[in-house]
Every structure is written in C-alpha cells, then in structure tokens.
Length: 590
Ligand code: ADP
Ligand code: MG
Image (tube, rainbow, N blue to C red; front, top):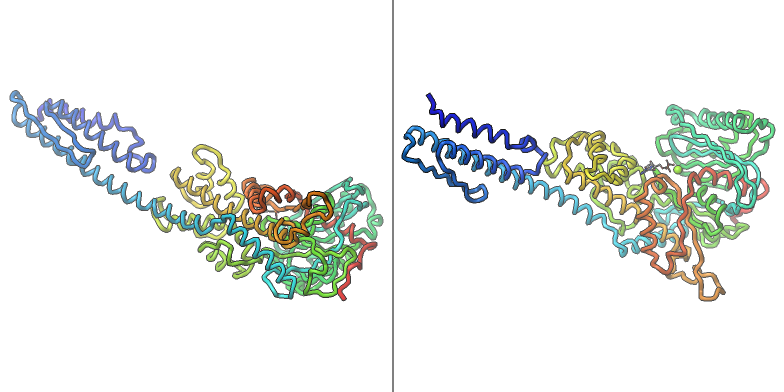
C-alpha cells in the first residue's frame, strides 16, 4: 500500500498543476510560444516543489529552464522507501520539466525563424514597391515624354493619345433637356438632365440597369435594341407625362467605355470588346450608327450628338462647373485620363483645325509603361496570368480591378515561405477572390484587435485564427499596395500637367498668366471620378498628398483635384448639349 504521505503529495502535485495552470496555457496560438513554454515550466517547477515539501523533500530550481538541479534531502525520521519514491518522483518531474522546456524553446526558435521569413517576404515587397518622391518625378517625366511620343506618330508610344473630336467643352451656358446612355460595365445607366444656363442643372434623373449576361454575347442588333427599348421605357416613365413626340430630335450623349477609334464627335468604330463582352458582329462597326438604327426601330426619334468615353464625360462635367478644368482622371475598376490639348500639338494629325484651337485627347493611360515604375514579382505574375499580358501595365498597378489581387498574392507568398499560419488554403491561389473593396475594409479596420481583418481573412481566404501579428502585417501589405497605386496615379497626373506646362517646371512660362503682376500661376483643376478615388478614403488622401509633394509648396496650391460623382454620365449629356446640331462640324482634318 502506498505511503499516505506520498499519496497526498502526488495528489497535491497534480491538483496544483491543474488548478494553477490557466486553460489558455494549453491552447495553441492563444499565448506567444515563448511565453507559454516559460509559464508551463514555472508551473511544473512550483508543483514539484510543493510535492517535495509535502513529502518532506526539498527541490531546488536553478537557471531559467535549461538547468534544473533537484536535490532531495532525506530527513532521518522518514523511512527509506518513502524517501526513494519521493526522490524518484521529484527527479522525474524535474527531467520532464527540462524536456518540455527544451521542446518549447526549440519550437520557439523554429517559429521565430519562420516568422522572420514572413517578415522578410513583406520587407522585400515593400522595398520593391517603394515610391520615394525622386522615383515619382522620374515617372512624371516619363509620362510627359510618352505623351509627346503618342501625339507625334501613330503607334509612337504605348499611350494611344486618341483624338476625341471634342473641341468644345460645356461652359455652363447650355440649356434644355438632354439624355445620355452610359455603357461600360456590367450595369448601364440612362440619364436625363435639364440644363438651365448659368451653370445650373434644374433636373437630373438616373436609372441603373444590369445588362443581362446573355446580352453580352448576343448580336449587335439585340444588344442595341435592348439599350433603345430601355431608353424608351425611361423616357415614358421619367418624362413627367412628356409624350414621345416631344423628345423628337432631342440630343443624346452616348458614353461607351470600350476602345473606339473615333472618326468624329458622333461616330467611331469599335476596336475590340473588353470586360466580358463578346458581340462579334459589332467589331469594326460604327457604334453610333448601330444605336441610331436601334432608336429608329424602337420609334424614338433622337439624335446621338456625342460619343465619348468616361474620362471625357468627366472632363465635360468638370468644365461645366469650372472653366479651369483641363484634365480628367477616372480611377475605378479601370483607369484612364484625358485632357485639353492644343490642336497644333497633335503632330500626328497635321492640319487639324478646330474652332476652339484645342481638342480633348483620350490618353488611354492605363497602357502607360516606363522602366521607372516600381514593378514587383507579384505584378509580373499578375500580368502573366491575365487575359491581356503585356497590356495595360499602369492600370494593373493602379486600378480597383487589381489592387485586391496584388494583396492576395503577397499574402499567398507569406504562406508559402512558412507554414507558421496553418495549412495552405486553396482560396489563396484563386485569382481575384479578394476584391479591392474588401482589401480597403481591412486597410481601414480601426478596431484594436483588427476583428474586420480576421473576419475577411476567414470568410474570403479560409485563414482561420490568424494571430494579431499576422493581421497587422496584412494591413501593412494593403497599405503598401494602396500607397503605391495612389502615388503612381498622382505622378501620372503631374505628368499631364508637365506636358501642358502647368506643373511649374520647364514650361513654366506657359503655366503662368501672362502680364499679371508678380507672375501669378494659373489655377488648374483636375476632375476625378471613379469608385477607388471617391469611396476609398486612404487612397484619396495618399493621392492628394503625393500630388502636393511632387509639385512642391509653391505650385501645389494652384492645382485642385475635384471629385465628379457620376461625371461620366452627366458629362455625356452635357457634351450632347455643347455638340448638338448647332455646333457640330467645327472640327476639320485637312
Ligand atoms: P466602374 O469603374 O466600373 O465604372 P466605379 O467608378 O463605381 O465603377 O468603380 C468601381 C470600382 O471602384 C470597384 O471595382 C472597386 O474596385 C472600387 N471601389 C468601389 N468602392 C470601393 C471602396 N469602398 N474601397 C475600395 N475600392 C472601391
Ligand atoms: Mg465608371
């Protein structure tokens, strides 16, 4: 039969170990491994000590876990069996403590090494994606140079620098009712605005409609009949009892955000479909002609007065409100920019005459490329796996379609360099599974434990119980990706300003109002539209900051970035007004 005093000692040892050890110590990831191993070791040592006290032995713990010397002093009044058993148990406990501690320390070292691999992967990305102001200035120069090249000859640059034949931007004097159709993605918009002169909009109705999936791959006739019928339905419902006869001859603006080779302000042929559309019989057809025929079939006697893309629409609405608006940028799912150029600067189109002496140039800047762009291995992979490799390089670093996917790729790499965060989830290698709005939600998570980040990692990427340090690192990844995108877009904007002599350098004389005392700089407004800029606050702040940083304190106050919500749609209707029958045919190419 066991000696009662030893029996008691054992019981107390186990009870003590269980009672004093918080459950959290037994759960992985709840406490950093280093702390956990230290605490478990302490518990074992204390428990062994209590046991030895109970059994009249004395245990000494020395060192910090790597060395434990247990010495038992047997007292004369204890019988030898009890002493041997007590000694054996105490030594056993001490050895177990040492073994556990050694395992814990080993784990700690390995886990720390794996974590450093993760941090290293992040730091390499951060370094490769960095955008110091010096590098941004190189991008500014490259943008201005490429603009020159694109205007000099067809195919002279990756920037297409397309003529829009828009030579007259709305100035606020327009009046009357105008309609617009906006096609450019999965939903399309129908608008009706009533302009009252003096920069006023008296009425504004918009309706959004999804384009049914099957219509994206149908025939051109069916597609345009759908647009025309939707417009007719809109006119009937929103027209305040306006009879269809009363819209007779009304001018319509048509925003068509696909690559189009424009032949006049109200005609242009489709170069290719993008964004999932594939209506084959439309390619190389005049899109206005197709729409005009569909309107006739539907019984709507309306005149398509302006065919524009979304950036031109944005410039138009910006100019309507503020005549100093000469540049427009769209940063949404995709990105593009346009600006008002002098007609004589369009060298590839010699003899271009416009009544105003200027013309809006559609840059198609998403395709801009320069060796100064901070390209990382993640960008290279994203491009290689895309539907359009070697195309739209700038867009792939900047626009909402891609930012979330760059973040996903960096997180994926972190998992690949280390198994520290648990099993690899297949979602991590699924393209576009992490959208940019979700990425923005993680970036803007202000909760102390980053609970939104944890939720999105769990729901979207199947990453469960991500430790806080990983969540913090994910936020940093979002920050690097967004910061780079915003700063590059800012450099692109300043590049345009440089080309037209409004950045305060080089062409400074053309950027100053002649004859004004003190050589005062000219005010320049840039109209900006698109969900990334309007809905993602950090992106907007980074972009605005970078424009000011590149321009410097003297010039920055003269450059104003203005948000144009839904500018592309309203702008098309305004352009229909400024290019209505009274004003067309002002552009000639001799
Ligand atoms: P589109 O570019 O398709 O015409 P928008 O201009 O509305 O449409 O931009 C939509 C894009 O903007 C989305 O694809 C998304 O990438 C981005 N976006 C929208 N809202 C947010 C947000 N809150 N945070 C970050 N990005 C956003
Ligand atoms: Mg848009």
